[in-house]
Length: 67
Figure 1 (cartoon, rainbow, N blue to C red):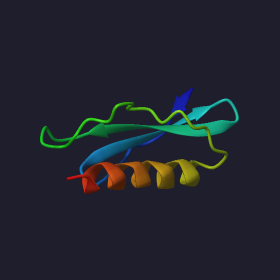
Figure 2: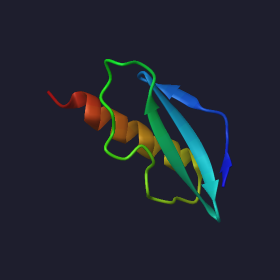
Figure 3: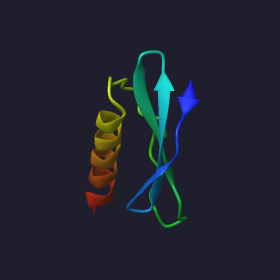
Figure 4: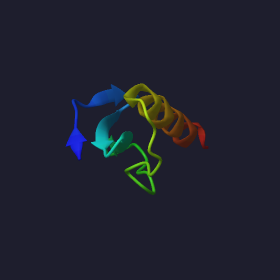
């Protein structure tokens, strides 16, 4: 497993991780007022790192849009 530089989005660190022939990401809040995710690492493996980042941003947007 290889981890690359973190991306920052809406108060979360997104850590892309290379696993075998695909990518997944870890999502971690950077502030105590942000909700924790049930699973900090997305289990879906995708072929492109950019796809994994887009998926992570969608998860963050869904979590932050909840009342």
